[in-house]
Image 1 (cartoon, rainbow over the protein chains, first blue to last red):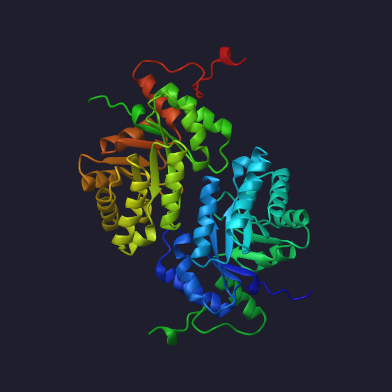
Image 2: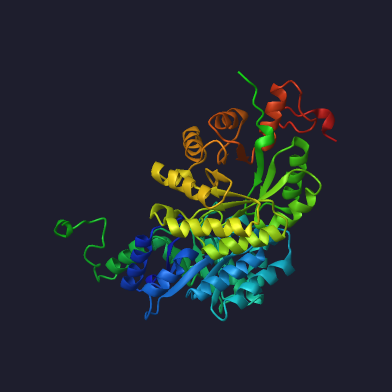
Length: 240
Length: 240
């Protein structure tokens, strides 16, 4: 079986309401250390993260209309503009779920396209919150995201009733085709589940367990992991 | 013991991501039927609720920066402006918890005052998410909400790790004094708990169980409840 590296696909994510400045700084440091794809932070931290990741290839992703997706669409557009001004490279927006369930295609297309336009060429990921949707709704979400100019569909906010499943990722990948992004997120806690989701078709993994996954992957590859970064095996010499 | 009517203090709340148009219409109908203080809905429903409650005294409340409170402060201001344009009477904003924990008083004062100014005289409630705060942080939140021109402090979003407690409501009431609003919200499911929170000092109750509470209160007062509105005791004659 071919070896599949998951670590470079990780959006290293910290969206807790009470995450501190120090937490965000640590997140950025870890992203550099492990070579993650991006950090994903709330809007009030975009400027700090952009500064901390200056002159690296690591992207700053932030969330819009998060996590309910039920704010006014003008607010999503404005939130995107603000994030871009502050240095965000990627926008993870939550789709309006009520409209999706009511098949309000025109409203949904417009809200996604407004965010895409406000993002001025940067990557937009459309969060579907798949745990609340049936198959038809998931497919409609994919179609609208593609049609309106987004670059990814994303399974979950991590605040909903369920996270990424292999079945959903497979369905999303099938729906969007091979030349579009699928981000699996929500409840991904270890290398095994991350890898299963990548095999199912995900090309980005959103998780707050990025460090553990990267360490597991590094150990498996026989590279060993960074000293002092392995909470399961504390090194007494480090404790000073 | 004096009788305390809880029903007129209720903000009849529906903030689920997938609440439908029909759900919001029902919410407004119930608010008229039971005489609640307000409905509380997500931003995309403000216009509909304002239309449905036209020419009543029932207020339309909506949420800003909800539920994480971690978006950029400019987004909270813009979200407030948009809600007011669409007919909102009351704004329930979530305070930035990271700043509260870091004692960033100036930033917090400014973000609350910006929302108060954008609300143009309408009631602003500052959600503290008390389950994530220590006593000192709760008191600071109260002080800032008062100083910046809000009219209420509110315990919880209902999406955090805990809801309203009698102890927290007592503390908030003590901190803001008698001439300021205290809204208890989160996990309030029956008349007994609503009444205990009012006795502790709350003058507004945010709950998605408003109909059950109002029916319980009406039964207790011997008025009986509306026909067909009592799920626990279905009337077969109504089933046609």
